[in-house]
Length: 99
Image (cartoon, rainbow, N blue to C red; front, side):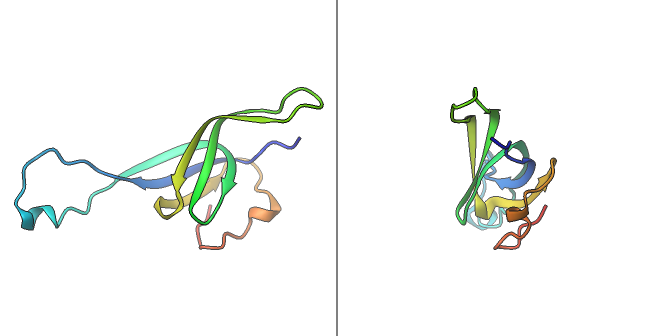
């Protein structure tokens, strides 16, 4: 079994403000938290990407397993940077996300 690609994903996550604000101030909030997550690229779909923190190829004749999976909504993803050689099928992302 071939190992999946190891990648670093740069993505945006929700941001919580715990301070008081007027309605006018609150609607102007546009902050988000920039995150970087690295892992084995298990799935790239239109709505989500899935990274596994651990890849176990298994013994000969066994199915591989993907542990500690992390699902990121695709619209939140800024970039996918390949840390290992990028598979040929992934060289062109359909929605413009790049590595």
